Image (cartoon, rainbow, N blue to C red; front, side, top):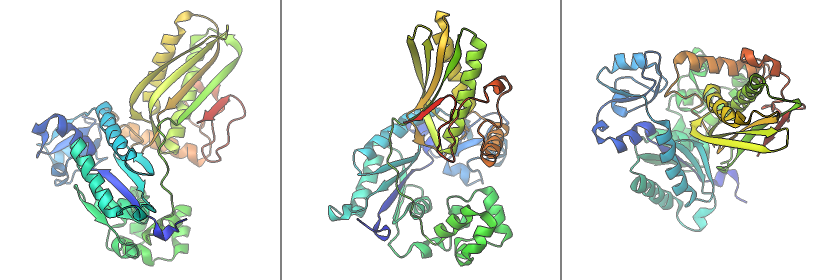
Length: 408
């Protein structure tokens, strides 16, 4: 078995993915500033072109601020379904040509090529694979290669747009040192503020801080951050399984025809699944609802959706499916909901549709649920009676005692 210092980990990152897809379908967008996201005054920039970035615009910025910085930019709501489709094309190309693939998000992929250098030259092979993706999809993609995921991801970011960077073993720490600590995974705005208060602006400075101090300031995340600053990351590439799923179902003590009760139960389950998705950094592309009637007959419907982990989007689809299934007006014994075709998903909130206020609301609710280890801490008012519904514990991995849940 190869030791960790012999690994070959590749990170592929599709450049300004949403914008690049839009330009495939509308060449007039090439060479001009483009903003994609919520187009209202309260919307958020989900993706922006490099032309817009030159004016100070960045992903996650309020759309009204982005328009102020770049008033001549073309603002678009975007088409999440279209982006999902193109993402699947890239995914299939990579799956057909590499031994181990992890889909980190709709536009990011990790590949473990460890040991393949005995079969062929890894650098030449992955360079040709990158060229193959560009040729077959016409999408720009950047690539980083190193012995771990962190350094490869940073390298791919540093060689954008449409570049490639390979970090030799032993050069990880030196490569990272001059870069801003913002370049490291795990460093969001709040963590950056904490580090800045300590006078830590570059990764090189962080490398010199004692590990014990970082643990005191940021807890376990401080240890992980310190290790990654040293170029150390032992996390494995996780195999991509397209058909993984999460599901919840509830069998009623007494068969019911009360549609309000059915809807409230479904809502509670969808909220639980949405939280599980976000805590697992996953998104779903397919939702299904199941109803078992008193005569034990089962009816089930499903609907595909652009990748999401948002409760309100999942709930809207699930409620419509339940309404369709309830047309028999017969006593119901069980109701269940499943989210499937899961992928790793950094885009936890749908910035194409949501306002800053809604994004912040999700973030705050998830923070409180995680802090108090209770996924039912905050619920919609109409589902409070469902607080005893069993929901998987995302921290211990233990299934609930009441109700039912399975993770396939």
